[in-house]
Length: 183
Image (tube, rainbow, N blue to C red; front, side, top):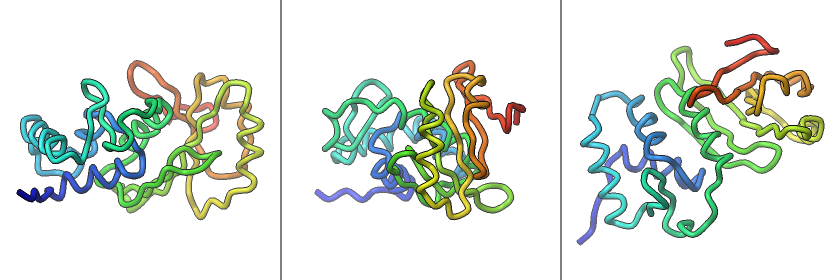
């Protein structure tokens, strides 16, 4: 028997193909932004179907990947980048790519005022100068860089003329800053 995926399932699979891993909560957050208020039971059924037809593989409770990647180590940086992508998307992710260093994830998000194009860079403590030096060799094409910091004190160590802001983990989510000012 051949199963047909829904548009919502295709949407999540397209993002998963780029990211390689995703939390169910992240997928639901992105799906809920599409509108239609389908509800938790609908999304549960969608994920069960995707698992049944072997489009996704569960790594642990609430964490899934592509079947070919089920034994790969969990990429915590990618999961944090997906959190930020979900925060910055108001309606739909139009394009997403797992990027090469210095960027972890690049995406085009549908927003209230049009579209936003972002590149997420992970700023490791002590490696901020190396990160910004590596960015000199990459064209931005109008993207805004989101630096994921461990603490707000790192913001002063990131020097770039590119449009950017900072994301700092706080209370299970992220606080966003521009040049040490809260967004």
